[in-house]
Length: 233
Image (cartoon, rainbow, N blue to C red; front, side, top):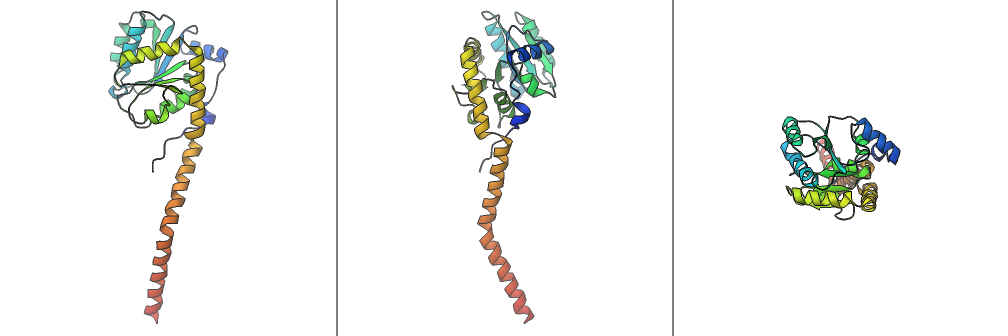
């Protein structure tokens, strides 16, 4: 039996209004008048942040209303910052470092990008969906189990920066679609991926195991007791 990860809705579903989102962008050094494509994760090769940088390079030739942000730290930070500095508008790429307020940071994003080359079952995607963000994710690992393609987000091939750029442009140009996918993602978390749901599944698994084992355990105990009584006689 596979029991998926769950998240605490009460801690993550902050649901900022437009004014609060603008203030959060400002506090992070982001432009409140630009859409933000953001991600959260360690800066290491498996997370493939280079793919987001390449998508940004593609988009900057025709979309000056976008900015990009990465929350997290790791061994590749220096090289990623150097690559970002070579972009047409390097000021549109922001490295936010390690954060202990991810739920608030997510509220500054308009689109969430997960571009890993490998994933198990991404808690970062679950958290982004709690924040009612439309998600663009590479179709690796358990991502397709979380993201309902074209309903709560968009799935793309791993390593395909052009597909990522196209999806960002599509969502960036359609506020209604962003809202619909974001709300759909939140409802999917409510229905399938809360910590309460995960706890209940674990509880039911234990109960089922006990029920399956109980008859043999009872029989073994009866047999052992019979042998002890026989030896005493």
